[in-house]
Structures are given as structure tokens and as C-alpha cells.
Image 1 (cartoon, rainbow, N blue to C red):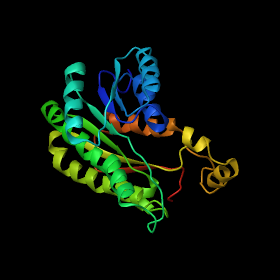
Image 2: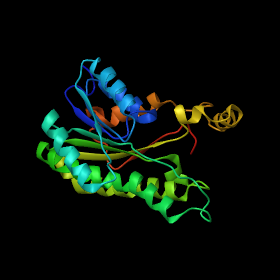
Image 3: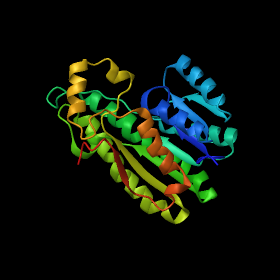
Image 4: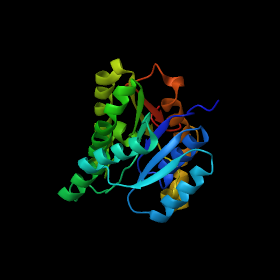
Length: 248
């Protein structure tokens, strides 16, 4: 029996990196996958094909979860198409790094809008169907930066720390309806984006991690599978750091 058999999951920002890794792993574990993307149509089509080939139902939606009404419409559409919404993975996120002295108001607002407001928008969009089902798992992607801060990322750190408080509050509100809300805080994960960085820099980051390696999207995806599945049915309001011991 696959761990996510017959569950429908929404994954935001799934065409690359961590989001893509989660979508593939969920499909392998039997979940039907509705995923969102902002602009990469070709990557979305390729992912849709790859997921459907795994014998589940998958569909990509070009959607901006940072817009409230768009998020509500999206959830309605997915519910009509798939029949249920069992898991929500809020993964979409951006960075606009700069020192506080140089950061513009727009760069602050945009990061909060995409990283934090979208979590509110999407969670609000799925809680009605989940309450009706009296079951659901919400997984919000924070970051090691949301737990410890990072110079040059005050906007990103604020958005990712905000997710922690939001998720704990949702866990308290919806626990009686058997809806769980948890957070994953990835550390240094090696994706297409980090592949463009200087190898010596990346190696120095790896050396500073107790497990002596960067994480892979699969490492995050496996933690998501656990929190999405019934294996974690008594876990809510928690933050799971998947960081190779970075914060130890």
C-alpha cells in the first residue's frame, strides 16, 4: 500500500527545485497531484506528463496564490476536478535579498505577499472542504532562515518566521476537525539555483553542516510524505527542521 493512496494534494510552486521533488514523490506514493506554477509553461507540461505516467491523476494550474480571489477560485476548480483536497503543501516562495539599508519597500512587500500572504490565501481556500471531510494535512514550507535569521534577508526571514506563528495558530483552531498543520524548515538544499553558485562557496557551506552535505529535494519530499500521510496522524503544530543538523 502506498502511503498517500487516494489522497489529493495541492502543491504550490512545483515546476522546479523542492516543489518538483515533492510533486514527484507524492505521485510515487499514490497521491493525485494538483500543482501550481507562475510562468514556466513548458516545465509545467513536462511535469504533468511525468506525474501522469506514474499512474495517478495530475494537473498543473498557472496561478498566483499571492492574490486572494485567485487562490479561492483555484481551490474550487481543483475540488471540482479531483473530488477532494486532502493535503496542501504551501511551497511557493521568492527571495529579493538585500541589506536592510538598501532594501526597497516594494522588495519587502513582494516577498511578504508571495511567501506569507499566499499561505493565508491557500489555507483559507482549502479549510472548508477539509472541515467537511473532517480530515486534512497542511504543510507549510518555512526555512532555517525563518528560525535563525540571516543578514541580507530580513524580508525573507520575516516571511518565513511568520509562517511558524500562522501554522501553530491554524493547528490550534482546526485540530478538533482532524485537520493538522505543520511546518518544514529546510536548510541548505541543492537545487538548480544553487548549481549556478561558485563550487568553492558551496563546498564551504557543506563543510559547515554536521552531515557534511547539502540536502536534496527528495530529503524535503520524504519529510512531506510523512506529514501528509496517516503515519503522522498525531502530529500537529510542529516545525520539522530538515537541515542536516545545521541548527543543532
